[in-house]
Length: 174
Image (cartoon, one colour):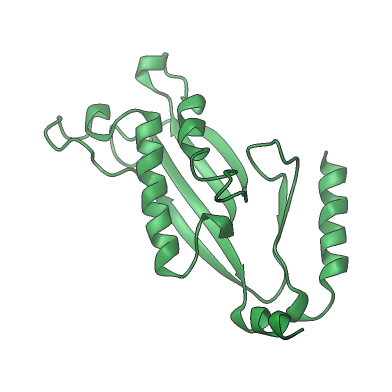
């Protein structure tokens, strides 16, 4: 699989050529997979790095700093994705421009301390690999001991890239 990803990335580099006009971001991997095995971002792309975002409080009446105040893993992931989407939109980007994600999950006490990967994926698949937004970033998902806020089960950091505006304009002229 790694060899296939490296060959695909090498092919993307070769076909991109030396000119920025041909710059294209290439998501490599099995179309059926939930994530890209690799993403090639050529020179001439604007990159945007979003620090880890945590979920918003969904129930202010719940005791502060509890899972009840943030919701379960799926709910928290949806909240984090909404915050990430807003950050991307502020900079003229969307989830289709995401090239790398790091997902940190705290073990859910209701699941015996195990991370709720299925809950995270239920939210993730509403934004990535859909008919409206087919791109998928390279991604790592890991369980961590805790996050900055008690009751938080999810934190996600994201990197996005978009072909530079000058490269897009030059490509349209061809």
